[in-house]
Image (tube, rainbow, N blue to C red):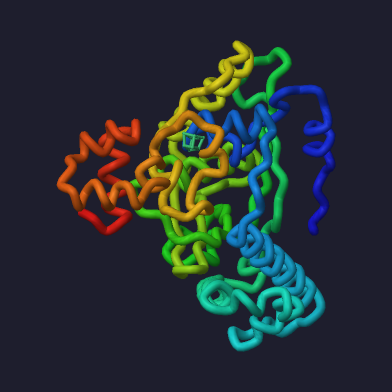
Length: 321
Ligand code: SF4
């Protein structure tokens, strides 16, 4: 692990209800204010899932890979070749379950960077697991709530194919699937703006990206004033909700409430939330019977006390539409 301060731990242990903003907190609020409330104001823990464990293992593998790369370059005069990259991975037991497609694609990404970089120095990361803070992001002056975050890697732009050769590029490694275009604004692009806010004073950030080894995709965004304004607005909304001690923040009923019939295909808080989005999927057999009996969407929605849209979505997921 790189040197990181223990400031976050100390803030978490403090009596402050909401001691700092982070990328995860802001993105969760944008996704669903009620989910944010359950996670960060009420402190309800979400169970660890397989994708979370996989994500941690892959992130730690990549972090140690860069540590080994840096050690090699500082020790040997001859730069590594593409064929040598695999030897920088740590003990194979840690990454062997994720070779295909994650680790293989990550090595392809690294090979492309090695071929693109104008020197071995610009191929090396500038920082790995860098910690950034902004003390007064909303420019309030009085008892501000700071913003903080860790970024996976900061690269020289010179090593990233397809980008201008100047400045630095922040890259987060994402182990999920590449998001569709319609989900990027409130997800990977907003996250990129958050990171630019954290590191923009220290580095000339020319782009921010998410690398998705599952699909070998690099999704790049550039710093944006309008996105920064949306980000600050969201952080202000969060602070207002906390100051005014709101309880039961707004729900955003959507497919992320429940996306399949199985118990693990739903938001961690679905069973305690007022959302009714998932009712047709929780009662899939009832929906199947009602459809077979010729019931309309409206009749199914009235029977299950849920929205027309959620019935539509469930029919699609159940293969009935
Ligand atoms: S179930 Fe839906 S509305 Fe409720 S917290 Fe989860 S995402 Fe938000």
